[in-house]
Structure formats: structure tokens, C-alpha cells
Image 1 (cartoon, rainbow, N blue to C red):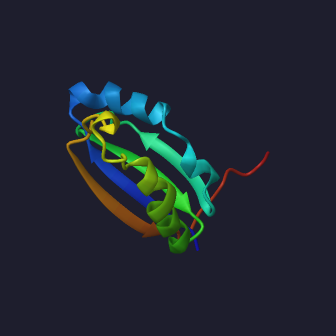
Image 2 (tube, one colour; image 1 turned 90 degrees about the horizontal axis):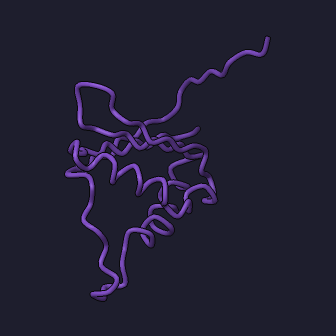
Length: 109
């Protein structure tokens, strides 16, 4: 059964462009990860400062393997001054987890 992980990022209006540019230039390591099925970055339209980072995985083990491997490596510097990462665009983050119990796709005409 597939699992969905939604990272809810609180992004102040002045940081939206920065966040979107960083996602556009990301390393794309997730796409080649075993068990990865889907990714979407969802921009808020009204009433919230929360972006949603939607990923779908074959199973929880696939997600955890990505978290402990490629994701962890991509979000860590080597600890040297020259390798400091820029300040995060998001001011907060919450991870939501779901299991896919039903799904539908468009029917062909």
C-alpha cells in the first residue's frame, strides 16, 4: 500500500520566490530513489502561508530509506565554514503521513 508524506512548510510572503527557486534547482535525488512514486510542490493561493510538499512512496520503508540516505545527505553540509547552507526559506515545518486506501485515475474516452 502506498504512503503519502506531506511536508507543510510555513513560508512568509517575502520568502516564496526563494523557496520555489530552491525547489526548482534541487538535486532531483528523490526521483531516482527506490520506491518513490510522485512529487508535487503546492503553492498556497489564499488564506495561508503554507506550502505543501507532496510525495508518494511505495511503502514506509522506502520513505525511511530516502530520509536516512539521499535526503539526509542533501540537507547536511560538511560542517566547514565554506560549506554553510543558506538560511531556510520556511519558518516552520510539519510532516503529515497518510496511507492510500483508495485512488482513481481518469478513464479513457
